[in-house]
Image (cartoon, rainbow, N blue to C red):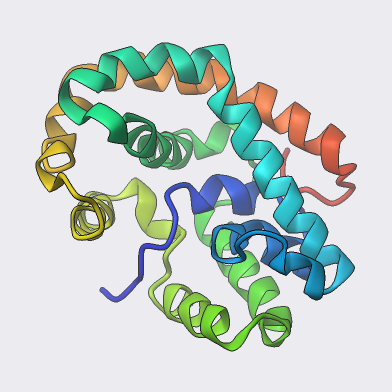
Length: 206
């Protein structure tokens, strides 16, 4: 399996992007387009970047998300929110049928095609990384053990205290039920916020 970890919750961002290729590109690659660089790109890509950042702010300040952090701090310390981002994407996959009438395979295939249709509009370095992710079927792997393991393994190589990440499986085993319930309370509100904030007309959300 070859897919590259660049951010933590790509699936949720892709899910909340709608079907406009440029808006999707901006939302998905926002973490790679630092500062105001997005302003040099197309208007729709720039709008997608800004939407990504609004989603992050909404998520970080949501009561359900914040209620999970104290549970994760003892094991994961300052990386608690990063671990939670990944696990929330995991719970999105596990509960996919509650939010979308299309299968995850169908969604991932369609999303990858939309991204590829406009990928040349991105800076070369971002285009290369995104292509690698698409080739590895990156969105699909979040909800499967092998992909989740690989995701956290990549993360340990990027942080100063990898020992705070390696025990993620224990967190999932012991705290997963509580975290999943919080996700299910949180995500419908994020969907409503996203659809309203971006005025998305073609969101692949049932």
